[in-house]
Image (cartoon, rainbow, N blue to C red; front, side, top):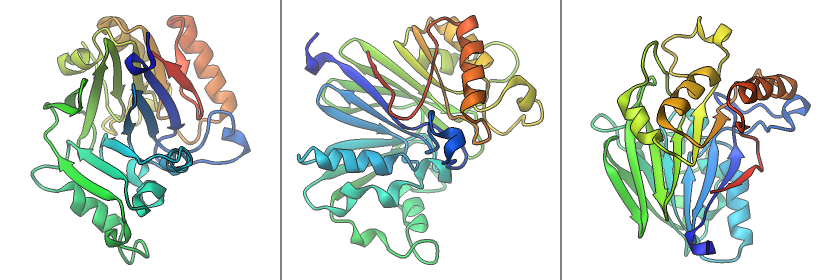
Length: 278
């Protein structure tokens, strides 16, 4: 397989709700969601949590003009709070497209980002950005083709204010990104099954344990056991635990990893710096 036919996934932020840096989370990481996906030479970024700051610095070190698409699962702060610190926004010559599928008809993505990046919440406004930035709203459920040969299938997820799940297809490889969603009792939802069907890698919201989630019904999150159930029903090849609770330290995550692998051999737990080649 040539480099142009490869899909590379790199994790820059894996934590949910709020960044949780420190010694207790050093191995898995404390930054909130950001996943870089390389479809050949094309760059797709999933979510703009605090992890996107380091990704932006890495992209600039490459020395080339950056042309990338940033797909947001939704606009809760843990998924967009890194955007004001994404250095490529501040440099002319780069082209970035931001996408959101859960805001219409009540909101627009540019309005939401502008509200966050403006006084008194932030000391600058969008006009300081020098890159060519486009804000693209869509309806979850649409099929998107952001780059030649790259297809994104989308669906609305079960999360307060809505969220979007993504299925990225490129050169025969499939990545399913399903975070900030709740899997209710009973059979897996058909729309989730369709996004996960036969995926080479499914990144799934595993915020809580079964004991924790009993008191958090309706919060829009899941457990690794629910993720395994979906992975099995959809014929997923590799299952990845993601969106870790900020209270789950490295020792706790090691325990969850062992439990998940005992049930689904080959499961992986997302951690900052992890790379998976599909």
